[in-house]
Length: 125
Image (cartoon, rainbow, N blue to C red; front, side):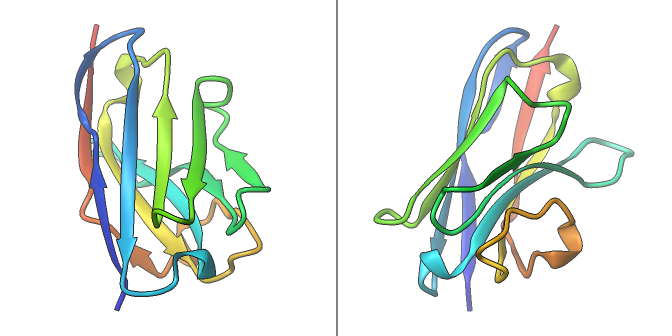
């Protein structure tokens, strides 16, 4: 059983920054590629960013390119999402997820096997 726990969400003004963390336990962290997704009220869950097992491959949604970065520390079993220049439209619940296709950094949420409970990010204008 794999457990994922997100943290770092909160309320921030537009233009500000937040760093989300996702701690993984239960299996060897480097077995998985990791992704971040988000879901705003009334909208479908959407891809934000992904990183393969080594950190050598990353993938970003067009809406966050140049503003968000994703990284991982396999020694700490943790993946991070650094969010800069935040906009009100970034407001959502952010979820991390683990993908057994560890060599890839996929954007399709159907490929992700394990999910966290989510952390709320609210960006005020």
